Image (cartoon, rainbow, N blue to C red):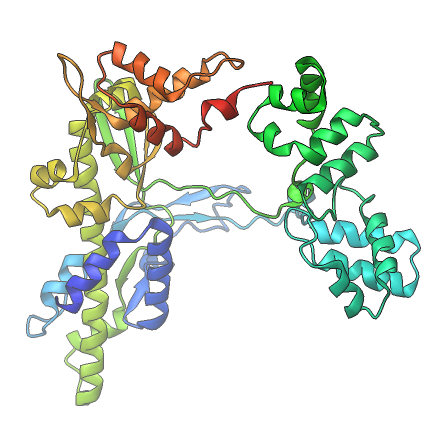
Length: 464
């Protein structure tokens, strides 16, 4: 493959964020490539701000402009440069001289370590005890658990293990409740103690029956503790409100928001596809480089080769980006044709679809369709979906059309959401219900789809 073809293929599989980063990197590395900016309207006459004062936070709207960029016919770049005449609208926003709006400022989120260090300094520890406390806090994981051996911490601080145990027990009374525990059992016992709950049943379940609790096996717990199932359920109601991950409230993970590559809107009875180019730099060839070639200036051979290389690289990048956007549009247009009922009515009407169907429809290779649909998202009337979502295997139906696997998964999800929490549906039972709806599906297929949906098996969904 030629370097240009390799670049085009690479661009196809990049996500929107990766593409923006790659473009920025190319702009920095290639002086022949630049982002279209304010200088495009340098020759246009703007309103005189002295005679036509601009109100605060208003905009000057400049008429659409077209820039004709031509080079001499005796250069090698005529076919490239003429292809990228730029047309666009520009908005200039006035500068707001008002004072900052302090309501728009937010404080930095406090970390678990900061929160604990603050409490440590206020407690009144001795110098050695505070040193041990700092070491313990520094060895907590993101969930608030101590992930190092206490003996090692004591040795690192040249302290006795009994002193380290004393400091740890004090830190375990700090906020958030259950912090600095060494395992799940210890953090739950700490929280029970801090709540002032003195119940031997709760303590016994935490110490000896967490596995049975996880499996919702209340009868086995009742038999082992020689108590009634009702007593077990009463204890579990308290345990289930304890926090298994004390440090979770101080998580610094920020949610990641997906920006769609495509918008699909419905106008009347028709759908409209709009490519989202917001945030992607508008590229063009640097005028200085174009003029240097177009004016026929005498330049050295090495300089000319350098100019040719950079111009070619810039031109191919622009062309590859345009081809990428065009291909994504064609794929989305084809998906819309095959899955029109889904866009109109929802997931229950999603049809079975494979890459080959789209590839044949728009006369492209299946590998190209695969690259285009990876990490590309479309905002539709039914929600935000990755393009790969629209490709589904089929589940046969008795005496009717086959159904998309995603629709079957949704049916399974709805059945489980509406089940009796004290008597949840087994995979066998779900398979029978779907078979009564003319869907030919096996129990193992139900189990596989349930796992994909991150739903627990029936014995772990049962509410005590």
